[in-house]
Length: 258
Image (cartoon, rainbow, N blue to C red):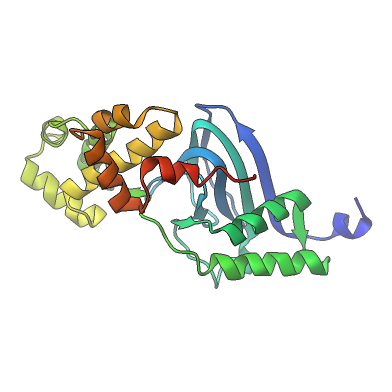
């Protein structure tokens, strides 16, 4: 390593590893660095105080500095993540987590940064790459891959109960009884704390679980039944309405070079 790189401070650090199925990275917060958590293959689940995020291939979640989060690997995951010094991003990027669609140009920029290893301000080409990355990240479309979690302990217990098996027809009623609440009270708590109706929250939980199951290689028909649909065709239609692609097409889009 050159003396300049030894003395310089990187604008961007990189993280490039392939993780085995089922790996759990315990909760932590990265101070001073905003993270773009991105998997070019596989699906990862990220839990934060604000909610749960499930990130399929070709997508990423922006995690601001200081946000406590844990990561669960669903299936085999090839990660190519970036850490931006927050003094570079604070005025340009969100200060809350957001899932984004990683378009081909941004994916290639992420791969190039990972190939270099770290981007330093002292190296003009690397400084330009860091700033082009930020220019592109600012305009990426956000995605509905978040499952918001309530703060109220009773509602949170009900949310955990529903999320464990969102396809079960009695999930909401069972969760209300388990939490010692009437369904109407539970509805009010969810509307207040998640800004979603309880029915829509369960629908989102079904989508999140289906992404995890598909990432682990489960057949579409099996996934459809597991998350509570009467047929594969009904599930495929709901999946496409939410994410714009059928399940097979959604994951096939990740089969480019990494």
